Length: 412
Ligand code: C5P
Image (cartoon, rainbow, N blue to C red; front, side, top):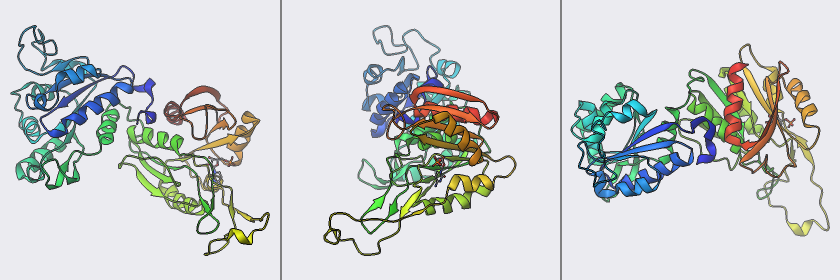
């Protein structure tokens, strides 16, 4: 999951992770690990009940700087406890950049909603000056109880971010809503609270991944794109506050539910989806490796190899150039980012393409590098904008490239 997030932007930021008494508490260890890998500093607080499910030692061993377990010092013997920090209920609020509670039990939710600071985590939450991310997990009847419903509504009204639980089979073998949601959502919501909101109020549509052009019911024509570069841009724009619409070719990676996803196969479908979205957008990012050609369909029946002899010929038609088409329809204020995968003359081709496609920014890479481009988590690019500004970016994670492209877009 870390491959979506640029270390440079989050490195050294401090997240305070609260854990409450639910069987889902073990998942907080994985969340901590994800933060740690993204370069974040993490402190943890366990309620008394949480400590019955998972131990402070586990969090400490996985990289937590401090693990708070008690409002009152219990003496030096307990090395993971507050020790002599008698102001431990106030410290995260003064020092941490973001706070997340996962899992959030009905009791902790009630404590925060009613301002009851009778244990360490609730005290820290009440003294936290910014919105908190809460990922509830509980029995479906507890989640459905009007008391919980009202407490959740209160927290939302006060600006806290609730990562709604999922439907399904919960640990007590009942089925309903209450299961801890996909961990990636709380992870992303936490990173969003650490991200600049410089795309708030903006709409961004992007194409990503390969296209797949069917020849017969079994065979198709496609390319090696995985959609990772586009996914990194989609997630970055989402974290930075944009309304993101992602038109995804086959096999594209997971995207958070907050991103509107349109799954398509052939270039012509991708074009139609993008044509529908574009009039309403502020930004268009064209990271898909669109097949320029499609095989003229053989028909509805599978082509039998026995009919081929030693060789066969397939005829191709040309697909619409989605970017060039929408570039022509660009209205004042709309901005376009194009990509170029080249086998030679990178700079010259990128400069030409920016003009021919009416793009505002063009990002090019050479396809014959091993640690760059298709199917690699890394990219080495040449960037050129319509004012003639140019930069070479050395090999770096696609997530870094994505965040830097968005930085550049805000300056255009
Ligand atoms: O001309 P070329 O394929 O190199 O241009 C690459 C750029 O144009 C990429 O941004 C790609 O997403 C976009 N493109 C497109 N539709 C096509 C071909 C390319 O949108 N049919």
